Image (cartoon, rainbow, N blue to C red; front, side):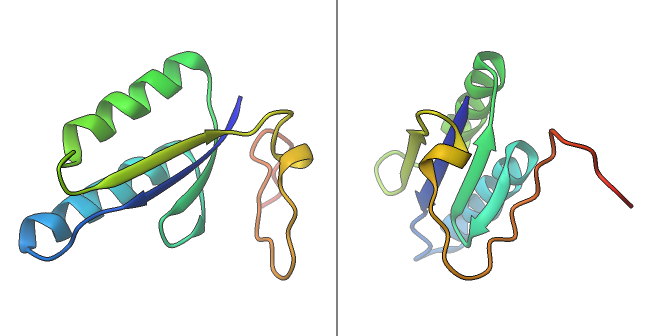
Length: 96
């Protein structure tokens, strides 16, 4: 299933800056960055649970925001892009 994940981490202090870096690192392991704090992810149910568990361990629920949107029909049917897309289909053949 394809998802769009976005986050807003409170960075008023050093702990917030650390959380921001940690959240970005976890998201990079599960998806493709399309904006500074927005990722497109193609995840199985197990991967989704793992991602959410890792992010729950990092974020401060009293200060931070994290949203995950399921893209019904997948990215190709849900996303309209204008300008540079930069999307890489990792499920297809990759040329080096």
